[in-house]
Each structure stands twice: as C-alpha cells, then as structure tokens.
Length: 415
Image 1 (cartoon, rainbow, N blue to C red):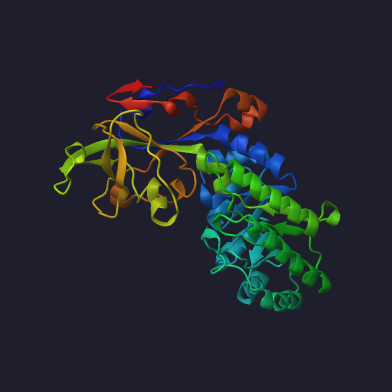
Image 2: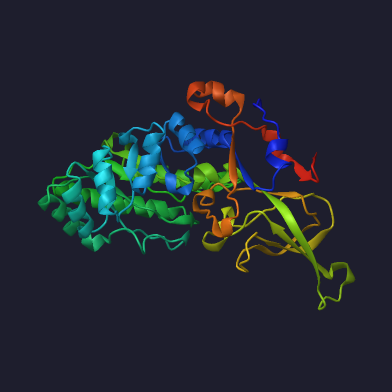
C-alpha cells in the first residue's frame, strides 16, 4: 500500500499509553464488499459501535447513512457534516428531550415499539416518520435483543391503529436478529415476519416504504464465508417478500461489520511477575508468567466482560510458550484480560498487539482510576485518499500500515 508516514517514535517509544491503529482502508474494502454482496440494502452505520470521528467521516464520504441511538450521537454525526435525512433515530425508548432535539434538527425517521413511545412522539415530533420495530427469533444469537426491544405480532395491529388515532405517519418496519447470529435463516424468517406487518399496515391505510433489517453482521478477519452465507439468504428473502419493484427501500444497521477488524490495539507491558506453580510435576512448565498491560477491561478491553470475544495477542512466533495471565492496569482483580494463555515470554517495555478491536471497545472505555484511555491513530492509504474525495479526508492522521505487523521490544522494532 502507498501510505503517508508519521514518525513512529513519538507514538511508541516515548510513552506507555495504549493506542489503536484504525485502518480506514479496511472500512473502504468492507463497504465495497457490502455493495457487491447486498446491492439492494443501504447501510446505516450503527454509531454506538464505534463513534470515532475519523470512522464517521470515512463512512459519510463513502455514502452510508447512520443509525443513531441518542441525542449525543445525532449531535456528533450532524457536526461532522452528515445531513438529517441520512440518519435514523433507531432507539425504541427515547428520552423526551432527545425526541425534541431530533425534531429541531430535522431528524424525522425514528423507531418505536409501544404505545407509550407514540404518546411522547405525538407530543414532541409530529413530523416523525415512524418505523415499527418487531420482535423476532434471536435464539441463535450470542447477544439477544428481542427480550428488550420489539413488539410482538399480537400487538402490531393495535399499535398501528393507535398511530392512526394520533395522526402519526408510519413508513416501515425494523427488526434485529441479535449480535453474533449463527443462523442465516433467522434473517429469512424475520423478513417474512416483516412482510406480514407491512400487509397489515397497508390495509390500515399507511404508505409503507422502508424495511430495516437491523445489524448483527460479522466483521472479524475471516468472516467472509459467514457474511456471504447471510447475504445469500437475505437477498433471496428480499426477492420473495419485497421484490425490487415493490417500491420499498431496504436499509440495515451494520456496526461491527465495518469496524471490528479495522482496529488493532497496541498495549505496553509495564510490569511482570513470575509465579511458580507448586502443583506442576513438569519442570518445563512450572512457571506462570503474569503480565500487567496498559489497557484492560475497564478500558478498550471492556468487551471481554459482556461481549463474546476471543483475545488474540500477537507476540513473537515460533518461540517457546509459557502459561501466562495478562492483567489490566487497575487495582481491581476483575481487570483480567486473559487466564491461562499460552504465549512466548515477553519483557517489561514490550508492546503487544491485539486485533479485531474496533467494535464496542473504544466507545465503552472508561477512565477508571484515571489510567489513560487509548489514543486512536487513523491510517489511510494514498490510493484510497485519491479515490475518495481527498479534501473530505485530509484531516486524518496517517501512519504507515506495515507497522501493524511489527513487534516492538526495548525501543527497537523487530519483524
């Protein structure tokens, strides 16, 4: 790749603060794959997943819409030049002040799933274009959402009739099969369920023109086979239940799909302890290495607590591996990154690279105990800059991509 290069010492050698390298080329490649694989589905990026301004700017330049869940997210996206019609306020339970803010800023498209929400919208945003979120089968997903969001089929007609009484405009249906879904057929069933809701709404006189198929799309490296499988099922279901000539716009809310593999976290080993395992009968494996790193579960690695993740730390290859425990920087014993992780021995001052860190990491990071939050350094190749409106992207910080594959030890860079 042709890249702009910043001098690496200022970033790595002179401090111990963790940092992310955000490979914006990866976003660009993901977007191209999306357009080729799901040509009828317009992506509305889920800002909650990673709200880094460089990510928002890049996706805006590529032409995506944005799924916002709060006043703050709407405010951020608008401040970066996104127009209101490219935003869906995709949260079914919104504070009244947030609804009022959306109204004043011209963000009209929003979701709902209960009568109480309709009453708030009726009082605060009479121009709203409503999207009814339905509960769908998410039993094959790692993170289930239908227990918290979405209306049941038995309530759909009553809610739509209430919209008529309140003179509110309903334009579509949304659903979410859950995050980490392992069953592609869940999308087919959900799309069929949405078709039934469309038919009910049309009979009540609504002009239905939007289908939102939610998120849950995989984004880690090596995800292509699963994503292609999901896309095939989605395309077939859309052709059957919402054919291209139906006049229905189809959107989705991908989050981790775009950013998961784009972010790599670099953490500094600032302390080390060797503990002897008295219970071991193997003299070759009677030591446990304990490492303390500059980021942890109260920071970027918070996803280890609530989001299914398999941390892949990348030190030297082809060296003897030891049982290791990696701890975060805080005094809390819950701040454990890995337990019984087999890896080569490293030293204080070394840096570890952790991949697939773009989703629900930096956005959920805290400053607990006032440890530094990880810095973020966006990376973009010259080829992409030239292809995607250089003026719109000129404010990014550039690093050389090859440094993602290097191992840093004692102030020197090793391949």
